[in-house]
Length: 194
Image 1 (tube, rainbow, N blue to C red):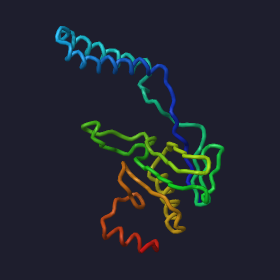
Image 2 (image 1 turned 45 degrees about the vertical axis):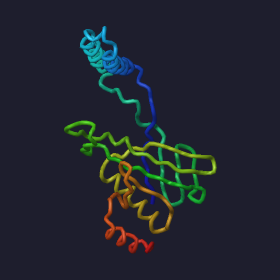
Image 3 (image 1 turned 180 degrees about the horizontal axis):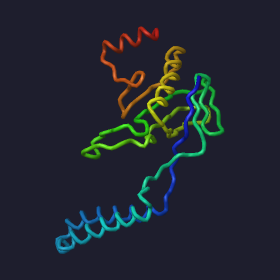
Image 4 (image 1 turned 30 degrees about the vertical axis):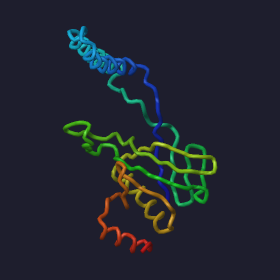
């Protein structure tokens, strides 16, 4: 049993730099508040920044993200973790930490937008330490079924008592759920930790 997915990597869409420059111009309009003689120019600088953001987004064809899917894969199993071409045996892995945020298409409301939005499935990450140092990678979740495949591996980790932590937005979870004290005790009994 294994979980297999694409890695998420940082990438540079050079066309998006125009939109980023617009954000800087817009933010700099706020600094003009502290220069009393330039207060009349604040709306113009702000408007110019917004216009540059819109033009930059059009030039970038709407893709202003600074990350994307890699051709390399992440493979997680009770035997070890493979990142691209490098395999890390489980016996050498310490401090394994999965941050499982969302799969592609999941509606999320993280407070950044009033109405929320649909996730692109690329905000999940895995960190661990190995003999070669600290490894940190982003990974893609395609669908609820893909999350279930990861859950099967988590179940195997718990049953084999492989040390790891799973999280969602910084809060520790157990099989993707935040548990009450009573539920946590039941969870520990189920997997033989109690």
